[in-house]
Image (tube, rainbow, N blue to C red; front, top):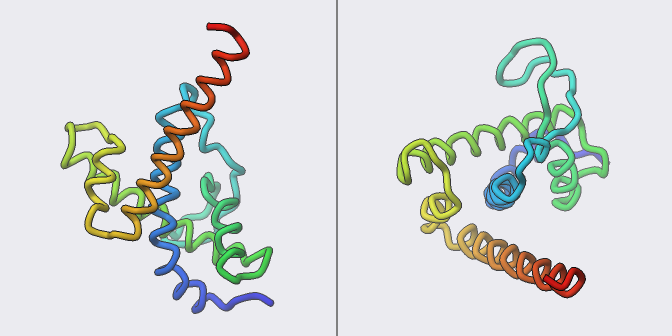
Length: 153
């Protein structure tokens, strides 16, 4: 069963906190990687949307959004238009957060602490981000210990 666009828009409010978590995880993943290939996904045809232009545009989060939509009760293969609208909302949210983070922290630079500062008043987002950051640190320590055990550093 496919969910109408109206229900997808209603679900966007619930997805907003998960989108901030996605933003934090993507930001920390980007900071950990040296190459620029972290966000590459398929280039899809965009026939309208917010920008209204025709042509090709990279879709960074379509795979993750499809999985999130399915997790929130949508069809396993949601409408491409619904995914595109949610992706436009995600890009807008990330852009807003990035601009705010650039203005409060060290000028011209975004750090994880700046994002955490911005979401400190939303207890649900703040708790989830803290959990993810803690898990990220534990994974780093585990990888380091594993590498030291294997390579005898």
